Length: 128
Image (cartoon, rainbow, N blue to C red; front, side, top):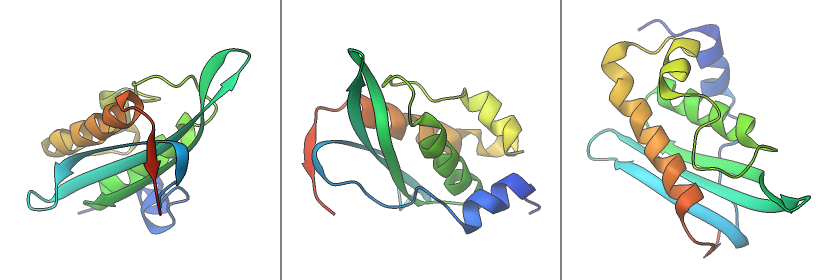
């Protein structure tokens, strides 16, 4: 399979791979390793001018290069935005940005589900 330069860049050197720890961390996951795609996001929410904002985001994934690249991009581009359970870009826009084949659309929906789970979950005491 041919991957775009953007996909390769985020896949080979994911800046946001890892986990966050602390009482102010939320965690959400979706998918399954048995099915071939699993994604977890950890997010830290802060407050600026009485608005909840995303201070940090990390991800773990068992997935193809497209999914790993998209998860990394989402984690990077969500920081500083309002803490809402919506991706920084729609699934369809991400599919186009990363040149993901339409057959993999379901995998990108798993990324979205993991993101929604993380932003919708109560605070946890996630540990590394």
